[in-house]
Amino acid sequence: MSIRVLLVDDHRMMREGLCSLLASSADIQVVGQASDGREALDLVRKLLPDVVVMDVGMEGMNGVEATRRINLEFPRVKVVGLSTHTGSNYVHHMLEAGALGYVVKIAAHDELLQAVRAASRGRTYLSSEIAGLVVKRSTEAHVAGGISAQTTLGSREREVLQLVAEGKSSAATAKCMHISIKTVETHRRNISKKLGLHGTAELTKYAVREGLTSLDI
Image (cartoon, rainbow, N blue to C red; front, side, top):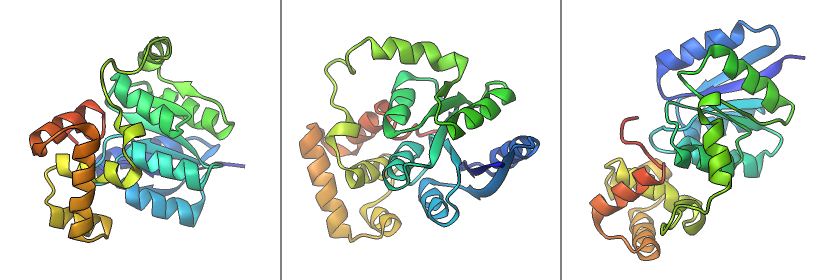
């Protein structure tokens, strides 16, 4: 049987190219495409794919948060992270969220095919460019002197922090998340208190450092 794949990337041309690549393989079927994390969650619920190829850096809800929610709600659905970023924070957080693979976009196309096949069998696959980073990270303590957003903040707080870092107002954030402006402002106060950070500039720098957004997406 074909491996049913959901493809998630916020760049249409990238999605089309990846779709053509995956569809060229006889054992892989692309059953859907999404342009952000929220749309990906909706399609996972409808399509129940075997594997989700998930872009890491996306506006609104990034790939890490979407992967975490997929892993909690649909543990049988496997995720392969796909990104231009090779920094250890991005890789670590994606794997920590439950992804079984991480492929760098500049890697050879056959690496993505290998990663999808490995994930469908419950196996881990890492691009050669970042495999060494994972090994190194596993032998070291977490970021020295830092507080991780992944363990310190709740999922809704991480969403708010990402949107704040992307320049969204409280009203725009509330609309995007389908919550009230008052709730957004409460989340923001709690984020600042937990992290000991104040002002949009400090929160933005922290969000970039933690890989919640890259600001070049």
